[in-house]
Structure formats: structure tokens, C-alpha cells
Length: 184
Image (cartoon, rainbow, N blue to C red; front, side, top):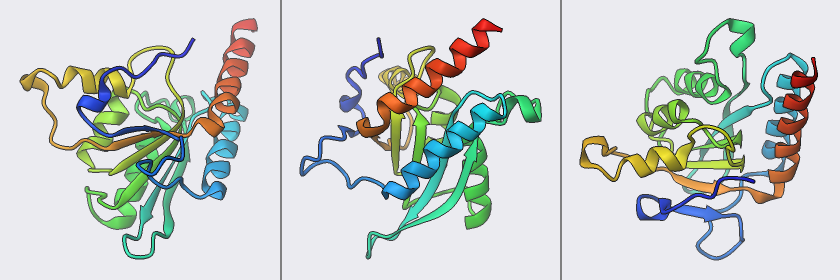
């Protein structure tokens, strides 16, 4: 069973993709489909099937422009930090020639881990759209719960949006990947 986000709304804006008036607009369907395909590609390369895309959102027009898209490349690069989010974040910062990505959103197939969440906070990414919550280990909710203590306070709280439309497909992709890996 998936872990439920608990008390995160005390610290930041968390929205289910309910379509209510307070819910931020969903990212373009073609961007979400590309993230899912890139996650499938990761699995084909023997990587955990996670993909991430960072888009710049024009405040005036509401148009989305892709800055970077990546998949997990941990095994390929022999780099434990080569998560899809980290690679997309690095490429987007390079494209923008800045370590800050205000007016940017992340679309990711799996809720970011604590390392990726920390990097996204530091880069000031405004909104994180994720397809499936993490079922193992700590994710965004645990990181934000840790900020209750002033010793761990962070200076930026992105808005989190669960894109439930892709949840089962993404969770199934992850389950199938790990089931196949365990059977070898």
C-alpha cells in the first residue's frame, strides 16, 4: 500500500489532482506522456524506471517550455546521484545559466527522494508534479516533516501536485521492473 502524505500541508501546498479551483493547472499531456515513455526507456536500459522533466512556465501566457528531460542513469554512469531529477535539474540550470529555476516545474514519474527534494528546494523549483508516491524509503513528505524542527528549516517550499491519472501505470511499471529483477 502506498504511503500517505501526512501533515505536509502544514509546511507547503499539497494538492491531489482533483481539478478543484485551488489545484494548479496540470502540465501538458504530451509532457506527461514523454515522461512515462522516458521511464519505460530507463527500464529497457536496466535502470529503475524513473524519468523527470523540468519545464519553464511563462507567467503571462501560461505556456510550458521544456528545459530538460532525463531518466535514471545510476548504473550506466556508476553514479549513485544520477537520479532522473538530478540530471534534469543540472541540464535545466545549465540551459538557464543559473542555479535558480524560478518559474519552473518538475514533472516526475516517482515522488522524489530526499536527495532530489533537497536539490529541487535549493534550485527554487516552484512546483513538483509526481505520478506515483514512493513506497520505500523517505520521500518528499518525510523531508518536509523533518523541517518542523527549526534546526532543519528550509527557505523554499515547492508546491506538490499528485497526478493521479498516471499513478497506476507508473506504479505498475515499477512493480514489473522489480518483479523481473528479483526473478533473475
